[in-house]
Every structure is written in C-alpha cells, then in structure tokens.
Amino acid sequence: MLGGTTEASALARLLAQAELRATLSYAGRTDNPRAQPVPIRVGGFGGVDGLAAYLRDHHITHLVDATHPFAATMSANAVEAARRAGVALIALSRPPWTAIAGDRWTSVPDLPAAIAALAGPPRRIMLALGRMHVDAFAAQPQHHYLLRFVDRPAAPPALPRHILVVDSGPFTVEEDVGLMQAHEIDLILCKNAGGSGAQAKLIAARTLGLPVMMIDRPALPQRMEVWRPDDVMAWLGHAADRGV
Ligand code: 3Y8
Ligand code: NAP
Image (tube, rainbow, N blue to C red; front, side, top):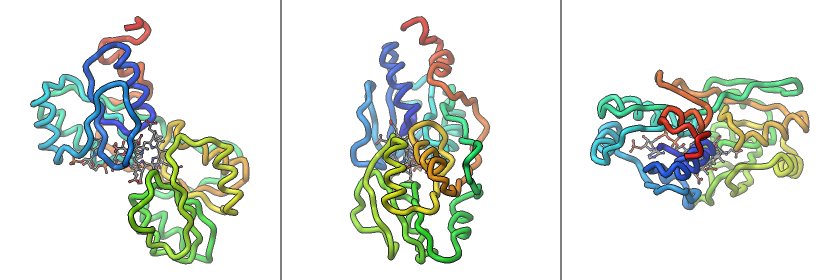
C-alpha cells in the first residue's frame, strides 16, 4: 500500500486483522509517521522504474494506492509501474468535499491560481496546506499568514508576516474554531483533500461564516478507485464481514 492518509491507516488495520501480508509505504515526508499494524517502508522508490522493480523483487500481487488526492506524481507512477510489472492496482481515495448551505467557497484550479487570487490589500489568511508549497506565497507578502505544519522546519518560512503552528491532524472543529478566532482569520486556503482528517477547518469556517478558497484536485490517470477500505478487502477477495 502507498499510504499517508487516514484511509490508508484504516485499511492497514483491516489487512492486519485478516493476517494478509502487507507493507505500508511512506514517502518519508514527516519525522514521525504514524505507527502501523503492518510493516512499513519509508522513502521514494526512484520513479516508475524503481517502483516496478520493487513490485517484481518483492513478488507483490496487489498494489493499493491509498495516497492523498494531491499526491499526483505518486499516483501516476503507480498506474504505470503496476502495468509494467503486471500487478493488479486499485486506488483507495475519498470523494471531494462539496460546498453546502452556509459555505462561502471560491474554487481555484491549482496552487498558482490560488496565489494569484490573493492579490489585493492585506488579509489574515489560514494556509492549511502544510509545508511543501508555502514559500510560493512570498509572491503575496502583504498578508498575515497562519501556517500549520506537521513538523517544525529547519528554517523559518520566507514569509515576512506569519505565525507557525506545528500540529498533525486529524483536527477537531473546536480546535480550528479557536485557532481562527485567536488569530482573527478572515480567509482559509486549503486543498480539496476530502475525507475526515482535514475537514474540521471547513466546519469551523462555516460556523464562523468565514470564506474558504478551495484548491481543486489535480487530474489523475484512469484507474479502478474505491472510497471504502472494505471495498479494497472485497477486491482482495477478503470481505471483511467474514471476520477474516
Ligand atoms: C507523511 C503521515 C493518518 C493520516 C493522517 C488525511 C488526514 C491528517 C490533514 C490542515 C491540513 C495537509 C498535510 C494533512 C492531513 C491527515 C493524514 C493529513 C493536511 C501525514 C503523514 C505524512 C503527511 C504528509 C503531509 C504533507 C502535507 C500534507 C499536512 C503521518 C501526517 C496540509 C494536506 O511537512 C511536510 O512536508 C508535509 C507534507 C504532504 C502537504 C504539504 O503540501 O505540505 N500531508 N501527512 C506521509 C509520507 O511520508 O508518505 O505522519 O501519519 C498524514 C496525514 N495528513 O494515518 O491518520 O487523511 O488527509 N496533511 C491537505 O490535506 O491539505 C493538513 O492543516 O488542516
Ligand atoms: P507526490 O508529489 O505525488 O510524490 C512525489 C514523490 O514522492 C513520488 O514520485 C515518490 O518518489 C515519493 N512518494 C510519494 N508518496 C509515496 C509513498 N507513499 N511511498 C513512497 N514514496 C512516495 O506525493 P506528495 O504529495 O509529496 O505526498 C507524499 C506523501 O504524503 C504521500 O504518502 C501522501 O499520501 C502523503 N500526503 C500528501 C498530501 C498532499 O497534500 N500532497 C496530504 C496528506 C498526505 P519516487 O518517484 O522516488 O518513487
């Protein structure tokens, strides 16, 4: 399994219960990734060739891509490597979030569009995007940014006005309401991750009547995709309801 999400961890528990031989793979982006009930491996594979070789060398029969919807390179590599190695592939993802009554969403197609849309007078923005892309916001230095990272970075982010919170989710609505009020946030910027682990900030924004700028997901290649860990177990031929 290619992991790094709440759903990946839920599936790992089912695989361990069914006593299936599985390995959960992390990219190694964070210092202390969540412990898992199955063996883990950490680090890139070395592109498509590296992943195809890994699949063959470890006699992998099924590959589950349970990475985050924005891990587009990993997902594209998984489709190509599984095809080359002749390994069955399924994606375990989650439906995109959709705005409901009370939401004040503006959708943007990608990160550059989000940064361009921030042109204008200073605002107090919660950047709930993690660490990987934060330096690009130096193009809009006029804003006060509230940043939330999983790990403390070696060097402070290159934004003149920012406050950094180090915390890994899943987050609660109460926490996120408190955070937005304490920092007088007037805009939340986030990715359309879907799932439950990052949803608290959307409910908090709705509660406080705050606008959200929502970055749409990148395009992913065509592949079999399910949204429930149990559906992966059924695909593996181990319906979880048999208690295996
Ligand atoms: C390393 C593994 C689990 C998985 C939990 C989910 C929920 C909590 C919410 C906010 C948004 C963000 C970020 C986020 C969430 C879950 C899930 C999810 C968003 C860990 C993890 C790894 C990562 C990588 C990390 C990224 C960053 C993104 C923070 C583990 C904790 C912003 C995505 O510092 C960095 O370089 C962090 C990088 C990729 C995106 C970015 O651009 O910075 N996730 N997150 C995985 C690996 O090495 O392969 O430590 O447990 C996992 C989780 N993060 O098992 O409970 O299922 O999505 N992760 C986003 O959604 O926008 C935080 O702050 O509100
Ligand atoms: P990415 O941009 O699609 O992938 C970049 C490279 O990182 C891949 O080509 C691969 O390196 C390596 N990689 C990514 N995921 C991996 C995994 N699970 N196991 C082994 N190598 C992996 O991916 P990303 O956006 O950096 O995401 C990295 C990890 O964080 C993933 O596990 C993802 O599920 C998790 N995550 C990401 C986000 C997000 O917002 N992007 C949010 C939550 C969790 P090689 O080419 O060398 O094989």
